[in-house]
Image 1 (cartoon, one colour):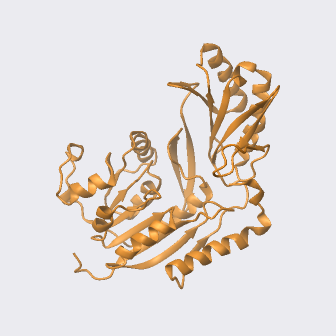
Image 2 (cartoon, rainbow, N blue to C red):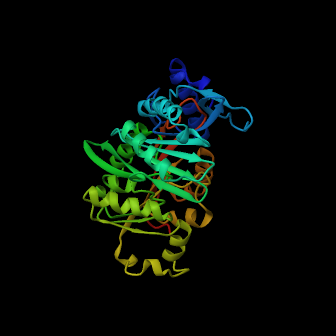
Image 3 (cartoon, rainbow, N blue to C red):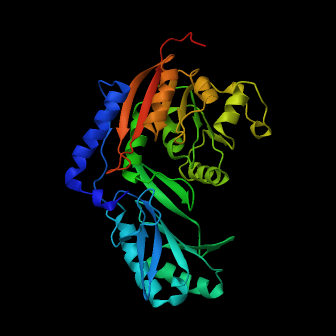
Length: 364
């Protein structure tokens, strides 16, 4: 996103334009609107590092223009912690040529709780001399440091941070690993979680969650259901989710590592999977399914399969594929609530949440 578009004075009008587009696209008379902070809302970022003589600085590239870098001295949409780290790291690498040499990219992951992780990516092999300087850098910045180069990953301490979110007065801890997906706008994430919690509190029964990631929604929504069964394909995300359930004292969740397509096939009796051994699918009384799919939306098999549930919680990062999915799901379900979450201010992107209720009990 070009940073010249970042103007807090224009934020409300930009949001109103996006909301009106959603209202028309989905023919909505009513929807819930959740604005973002206008500055310092983004918890993660990545930059290329540009070298000119004795000076190095951060650059970004306009979409579709890889040959047109523009300099970034401040990052107003990034968290205060990211901005602090950007300036401090430049000072440190200018003092230590070994840290600067062939460094071409930096990735930042920060949290509302104040923790930070910085990944330094190089066009060279890293050695013990680099590790010694990186350890000093970690102490100086009070941040986790990771070094990466081709087929190499060096940890100074650990490769994750711990986020702390507050939802409906309760605090939740989340381990967030380097390289794994996390919600970029933590403030909006809290609002999404609170919205989903509020509007599912009377659903009862059991919850099935597809694409659960590190358990972001799972941990919060578990209190509304007797049992929760969640699926996720990433090994790292599954590991994080299991940790997050433990530290948040959540004991009614089971997680299986498989894709939504595989799980849909298993539940429909099309295929059997060894990964489901020990899980009694017939013992669950699923009232609700939560889906938070990638931008491609729900595949046809999953789309057809989730229509069997009384309640569907659909979190979408792509209104176009959401609209397509709702054409099919609208045959069996009605929209109970529709929300717009402005994860990405000053862009055309918008996050949506939909609560769908089954129209009749006898639809197969």
